[in-house]
Image (cartoon, rainbow, N blue to C red; front, side, top):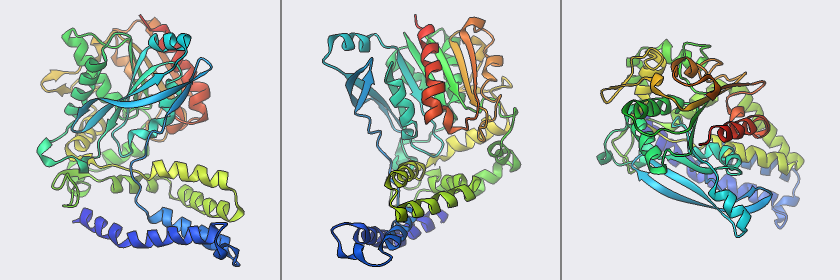
Length: 413
């Protein structure tokens, strides 16, 4: 019922957002006489602010069509190489007509970037992908909005997530493969490689885990505390809703994206309020460069997806409440997850100021992966970086990525 109420609200607001967008255009366009009226700049800014606060945000595109490799510009073609009901494996294929560059592209190591399924789309890692493409052949998991998956496709649990990661590793091939997991997927990715190693399957050369909740008993954050403050039944009864009839996934139980988005905003309401007020003032002042940066950020931040209920509840119970992975008590489809079976090189990356996964939660992987040689381990704590700063933005590009690149280069066959 709550989900349906949200849909009614969206439908009621839709014509007003269209009108606000039209008003912003009329009062700001240089070719419009209305832009010459007194207070036109403030009126246009007010209309646009309302439009952006009330509009629907669709899934953004990666929009990576060119990248520089070894000083030469290469075209980038994105294509789907594997498709599952709840996820697509996307490949960014770099193309060049320069023989030396082509040879470099062919000799680049493969990277599987496992994106989070935690409310935002995989495009949140656009900056991560763009940097990696300079030196690597990049694949990424592009998770499907659960409200778009028909009920007939079945449920999707954390166990299924692990199986998806295993299958994608097999599709790419473990030879010269380096897996990077960002935030939430550090847990299922570590499980997937553990299970493959225990069976004697080929495993990736290295695992790079960034800002993930491997052991949330260490440096717990407000996010961790929320998951433990309420009993498991509270989450089942209060945050799980049914997709309404106007979506392909009608009838599916989900943790709705709009609830997740409300949680994001509630973590820092004052910061978001100030950001929107600054956006209004930038429009009035005519600072279009800063205003456009605001648009880019919130186009991504406000675009959210629904998570399957089974998967979300599994994460609450297994990762945040019962800590089954670090306690050695997690079983996936009857197989025990034992990170001690892993021999792949491991690197952990944490942000000093991360308020989602506290320092120590990701590096706990080093205590679990006891079979990894000391020379094949690396820990990095990025000073002054929050959660997003370790995989996006200036710190990622100038401090983190060079170390990731060098680590991968050392661990190649």
